[in-house]
Image: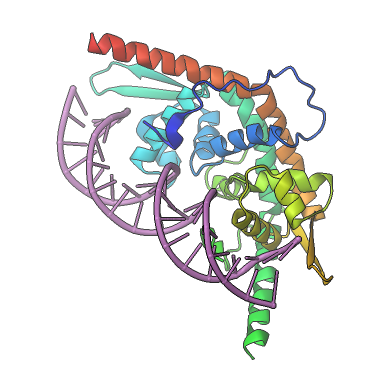
Length: 147
Length: 147
DNA sequence: CAGCATCCTGACTGATACTG
DNA sequence: CAGTATCAGTCAGGATGCTG
């Protein structure tokens, strides 16, 4: 187990029926950061997105999520299951068979993630351009500094 | 420098003028993951949110972002600046003074992040409840297994 | 097929000391 | 004030081998 300790066992944050009309600031950020760290890791998002289409078995899932190791898929799925985002169904057939599917809770998360995904697809090239420009300027400055 | 290598110097992904009507799948995930990893680290989000209110100076910013070390604030700001999300303005006064502000690009990112933030605030308690229930079941199973 | 246990590398992060 | 440099600890993640 572990994986980021899997902690926060006893932590209850403020109730959800609060006003959320503006972008949260201050201590709210920690809660948002929590979710971002949760879904922002290397694999969770991809697993969620793949499962959004349809339930899948373990190795099927593994083939869909390109580059994931067997261990990390196991870990990721376990955490997602712990958080109630993914449901695990074991069929006791001759070769054991396990199905993974998004829960309604998981689907609800996939919506705001979708918003971010749209931003990403629309602006990632701009972001890379910015990096190139920044690096170009930096190298130029380095050159002039060395000259 | 470095910080996740600060690489991807030569990477050009597919153009942004693609159809984005459904939740992206497959290889698109990598791009989304890229953004999530970008904004999903421990501090970037909080810095963006704090700067969303108003521009701030270095130590002012540091006081707003609770718990961040001076080094990590420096690093985070540098990466955000590199990505064109934050603008750095140096005033050559007697004690040097540096202002940080969100660029329009940064503001555009803060919108989808806001969607996720709203989800987080509304559902984080559910998520923790799910964890508690999962852990409770697990411990119960452990007990029965040991008995 | 599905999953656990172990070892190992590297990235993130903090703490501390030092510079212009 | 606004950083840079260095040391050190923790942890995500990959690779491999083994179980039921």
